[in-house]
Image (cartoon, rainbow, N blue to C red; front, side, top):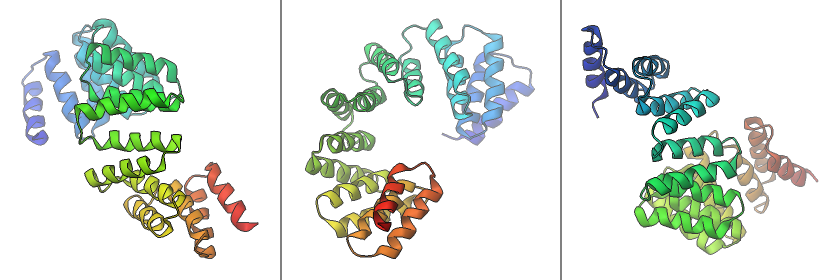
Length: 270
């Protein structure tokens, strides 16, 4: 875990004329973890130039390119890693996650199912499959996949959070509340869990708790527009109309295409 020390020795290898592709690839990973993405990109390309069949280098390049926002190139890198190593479960997972984020849910589902086929204990794959299935409206299957992630690691806070999202979509408010509270117990700084707990509490008529949870979400992440909009909506019930309007306008300032904020503002101004 001592990245600075590791970086020093890898740079020494390179300065001494070592040209093993593993050196460039590993150094690229270290630079990626240090946030030096452009340098990581260059070194990983060198590893691939030296050894075009180096599947791990293509995989790591995919991660770096994704972080650089070069999504098409990232997709190609993951596909190349899979071509070279057809059982590369992590590459299927990352490619599926990338595709999911661009709305191609059915293809993403197939890719992540492939990741699970090659590595049934890949916890992130079960989590992401659950998210995709929820987005596809397959809530029962989504719950099964998410619970599988929790079977592998009961302390996986993101799985508890996504289980809460599934219950919320199904209208199972009590179960959703329990899942969000468990998420917060495991990760008290998870702003979206506080925000969604606020929504659930509001729907259950627990307005004071709803307000406190949503304010906590904003405290943890002042750039979370949905939380401002939600809090504005909650405060209407307490007749805090001026603050409510200010909060909803803040949500729109942060995210001008946030439809629910415009709806909440229109309802307030009627």
